[in-house]
Image 1 (cartoon, helix red, strand yellow):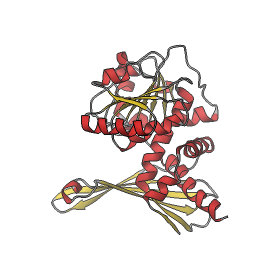
Image 2 (tube, rainbow, N blue to C red):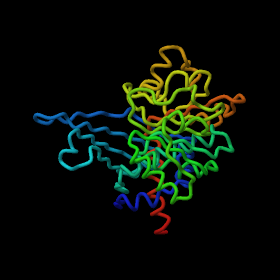
Image 3 (cartoon, rainbow, N blue to C red):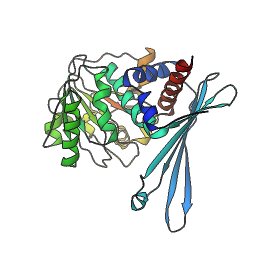
Image 4 (cartoon, rainbow, N blue to C red):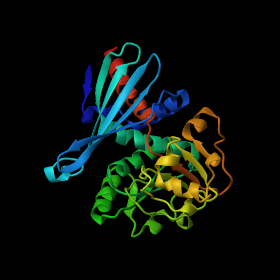
Length: 314
């Protein structure tokens, strides 16, 4: 069994091959049982929540990611979230690899957003707006640059210090980056708007977005979370990474309930990749990609990490 720590996992998940690997997995498909949620009781404290996400391809690989969320870890000087990924041979059950789950999650999330942009964003898109300056937001310009000619990045975050630090980092990576004074100013001229926040109320409003722009929503993965208002979805082409998005994300639950967007009008990334849904759009029409994360994406990343080791040994 091979062990891949954070540094090696990151090195094996360069975005160009990772975007290709995620697309190939969406095209081929895999078995995806429902995510299991466990509550680990603790005396006098909030329970630890453990998420168990599995996926497999018959005759190839079987993978399980475990995500443990422990409220109050900050007081212990520990991160609040830890995750691991174990990859097995699906035919024999033999363990193949233990992989850093945090790196898999962050990088496959950015790669999936970039994959969606490769189908939905204008081919000439060169200006990316980032709403948020956390771990995943920092990866999005590099990931999107694989599929679109991104040159400019405009950043807004609740913490000006974090926004400034991200802009400095992006400038070192060759982007023309700047901090915006407001969300409206950040998104007004952007070709692609990517949101990676923990917001519980809309930050982005449809009236602020440029015609024909692409909106990428990452942060809202529970019914209580929301990054975009209803008008972002009105008349838009809406694609999700998983059918679960319609019931998991506050970004979609509200607009669906109010009839702003119909359930039948929401397509999946797998449909685009397989050619089962037309990738075209009307002139000036907005596109929206809503991701909530899928074990399919994790499996694609884990197999890429391990396959790289197999090729090296060969």
